[in-house]
Amino acid sequence: MPAPTPPKTRARRAAPSRGVRALRVTVLMAVLMTVSGTAWASWTVSGRGTGTAPTATLSAPSSVTATAAAGATTVSVAWTPPSAGVAPTGYRVDRTDVTTSATVAACGTSPSTLLTTTSCNDPSVPDGTFRYTVVAVRSGWTATSPSSASVTVQASVATSTSVRSSANPSVVGQPVTYTATVSAVSGTPTGSVTFRDGGSALTCAGGSQTLSAGTATCTVAPASAGTRSITAAYAGSAPYAGSSSAAVSQVVNAAATTTSVTSSTNPSVVGQSVTFTATVSASAPGGGTPGGTVTFKDGATTLTCTGGTPTLTSGSTTCVVSLVSAGTRSITAVYSGSADHLTSTSPTVSQVVGAAVTTTTLTTSAQTVRTGQSVTYTATVAATAPGGGVPTGGVTFKDGSTVITCASGSQTLSAAGVATCTTTFATAGSRSVTAAYVGTANHSASTSAPLSQGVVNGGAVGLVFSGVTVNGTAVTPSCTGTVGSSYTCTVAGGNNAVVAANVAFGSSTQTPVSYSGATESIGWTSTGKSAGSGTVTVAPNATTSTATVTATKNGVNAASVTVTFTESGGSTWTAVLTVS
Image (cartoon, rainbow, N blue to C red):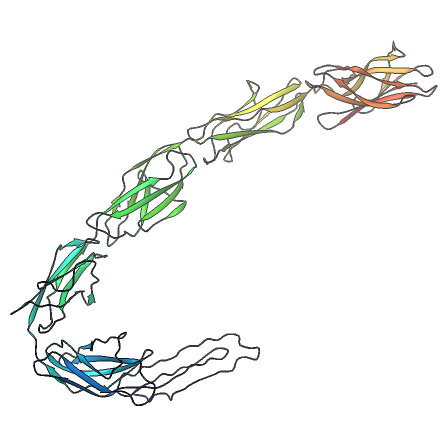
């Protein structure tokens, strides 16, 4: 045995120059000597900073004596306390059977129950030959004395112990009562019995481990399957000697289970998230909380869960799914079982899945188009919460109640839920266009809000003048240029002559034509004696304005009026009427 490290009262290591950054103390070795002599410990520090730790010496008691009167079951033990080192907190007394070398705590002591005296009586000692040692204890340190001389006790009555099970085999979680019977050739033994599973003492949930009329009981509910080796050990009580039973092989089988499944939302709609919850419990007489995994099924098909976990927690688990088609589903939960609990399948839950509600929106490529000009309508169909999925099927486009004949596009929804229709209109006017989704088994029909589509006359290419007068007399102006861009008209008049005219939409041949089915405003400005500005309007489907535009000469100087209109395509049409 190596020599003890010399006692150290303090150790310190200098910190780095920038101060104490960290301190980590690691106990490398603590040795408690349990031989006759002293107890000692050593320590080291590592890392930054400083650390301190005290060490001291705990010496063992000496001169242990053990005496017993003939026929008595009490042994008197005495010892001399340590004469050097720190004082012990107290003493633990150990008794060792010379024959079996088994050691037990004596005199009512234990690691947590110590004596502060230097003598004690060890009562109810069984027959046999023993040696005693005294252990000085302080703060978790111990120092053990040399053994006493042997002392022989012979004052007990032999006993026999047997044990039996109330249910064998049993299942996991089933309460089983073990009954121990202790008998002697004379009298009825008293005292306590310890029940063991192999080498481990059982924690009894019921029964009494104190003998009554020679019997003691222990009720337990095994938490795992397997074969147990159950014994009962009678501790002995003067004058009765201790004894142990033969082992009983207790067979513990897996417990049967029941599984149930519930739905968070029933009925649901296509694409709606539904949470299925499975609960697994042990069937009587079994018990415990089953562990393991659960598989959720739709008929024979295993569900792919987008949320939840298949592993049981406190006997339950969840599966979140979004069912993508309408119909009635047969949902079950299958528990896979474990070593301690048998597999089971839940009754079927009929999950009703209805069609999801949809909304249809409609857009146009141009708010106003000319007759004969192509326009494309785009319909988008989407499921309305809590439904989901992308609708499929067809869309019908309508102008009022008339189905539009689409020249191109696809009226079948794409993978993104979009359908298109490209068409033209032959006549001017305001149209009310809708898109009607026909629906499927999985998504209900829906119709968009009406979209107002303006259609203007494609034959109108600019502005012209009609009903031209000079000083109230009708005249025919002389016009040059191109209608819609550089179109100008001139009439002759005397000093201070007034020219007036209606404004019309005109064709390329200068013929007035109707422009649209809506009221259109045309702006004007004039130069001359009474310069000004304003607007005139053309009624829906009319060819000319009802109000006139005018300009007045200032003496012999010419005057003119310019009319302006921005058409649906964004071009600006102008025309000029001059009186010279």
